[in-house]
Amino acid sequence: MVVVTGGTGYIGSHTVVELINNGYEVVILDNLSNSHLDVLDSIEEITSKRPTFFQVDVDDRNQLNTVFAELGTSVEAIIHFAAKKAVGESVQEPLMYYRNNVGSLVNILEQTQKHGISKFVFSSSCTVYGQPDVCPVTESTQRKEAESPYGNTKTICEDIIRDCCKVQELTAISLRYFNPIGAHSSGKIGELPVGTPNNLVPYVTQTAAGIRESLTIHGNDYPTLDGTCVRDYIHVVDLAKAHLQALKRLEGSLPKSKYEVYNIGTGDGKSVLQVVDAFIAATGINVPYKIGQRRGGDITEIFADTTLANQALNWKAELSLEDALSSSWNWEKNYRSRKG
Ligand code: NAD
Ligand code: UDP
Image 1: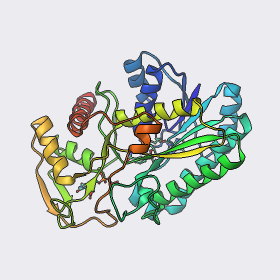
Image 2 (image 1 turned 180 degrees about the vertical axis):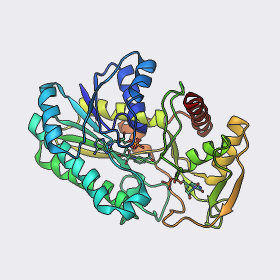
Image 3 (image 1 turned 30 degrees about the vertical axis):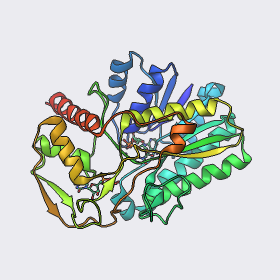
Image 4 (image 1 turned 90 degrees about the horizontal axis):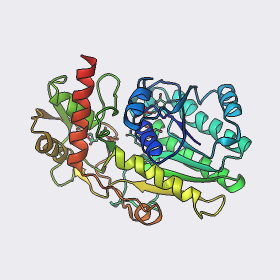
């Protein structure tokens, strides 16, 4: 049995689908602070299996004690997605972010210790690299001081896991995600931004759908190919599959107490304008845009060297940027039509 915290969220739900499709029994722990219960129906529609669900706050030790006492010794591994992820909000409310993201990790690691759970996968982020001096970044590229409390929670959590692996019967992998985009091909699960989206692709799809008047491109005077920022956009289904490969590695011959870190991206940097053009090419829908000011805290360019994940996890991104963008569009249309 695999416990997935944050399993009704965007990346968690796609990973749960891959786990179920690969024969794993899944238990989701989520407090629904940024997701909805009907995601369980969608997962069931896609996989014909409904994962067990506990509505719990992973930040609450008592609730976790009760759930893990009930699950007993049948938990083989934990994939820990549950976290708050709004960068701007973390700047305004740092304590909320440290409590929720770091506190939850400490609580869940306590359960691994208590119940002898030895396999752990953690959602980290390329935000730990800050603005890198050289691209692509490898896992040994030095981490930089985080740009936000959210980013700092990822750096701190990575270090906590590393320290626990040294003394516990724990073998763990942190996956440093680059920019996850896209949705499941069924159009039944995808990203559900609350309010006005901050991220590029939800803003693009909402503009294409006529919900937003036009996209503002945050600056075109960066030292990049066309002046707009460059990121490594990874299809969420490819990202979900990386978790499966990480689990397989933990189930394999990895020495006890080993802690590993992998970049999960495509290895290909794309500018904001390239994403907009690719969306128009993939969907045939126009996206009106204007050039605005730079957004505070934006990094000029980052993309991954994925050699380590290709080799050690036997994982490689397979889906294209166009695949990801048309799946996002499909999800946006489906979601709007379901909402009426
Ligand atoms: P999401 O908000 O869609 O999913 C997170 C889930 O965790 C939500 O369902 C939320 O309800 C739940 N949750 C939050 N705090 C909780 C708590 N205390 N107890 C129980 N459940 C809780 O986010 P996502 O995009 O799926 O991100 C998943 C993970 O990946 C997070 O750790 C995030 O920081 C990390 N990550 C995301 C991105 C990205 O761009 N989406 C990039 C890098 C890393
Ligand atoms: N971006 C933009 N307009 C938007 C949202 C994002 O130009 O409405 C740009 C943003 O400045 C960055 C890139 O798109 O250069 C990716 O931003 P996103 O917030 O999706 O991801 P980040 O890499 O910042 O986590």
